[in-house]
Length: 114
Image 1: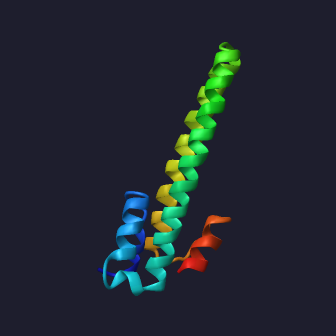
Image 2: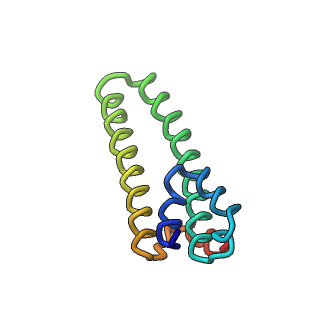
C-alpha cells in the first residue's frame, strides 16, 4: 500500500485506524503515515470532547429557552456536524494527495509525535 493511501486511511475510522496504522509494519516507521495517524487520533479526540461540550450547552439552552433560540441551536448543531464531516473528508483528500496539511493545535501535536 502506498503511503498516500495509508495516510488517507488513517482518518477513515477515526482514532481506531489512526492507532492501527501506528501499530502495523511498515507504516509505523513512515513519517508521513505517522503524522496523519497522530493527527487523526488527536482530531477525533478533540472533536469528541467538543461535541459533548456543545451538546451539553445545547441541552441547557433548549431546556431554558425552548422556543426560537432552541430551534436555532439545533440548526447550529446540524451545521457544526456537517462541518465536521466536511473537515474529515478534506483531511482524507489532502492525505491522499500526499499533502501534509496541519490543523491548528492538533497538527502541531501530531508533528511532534511523528
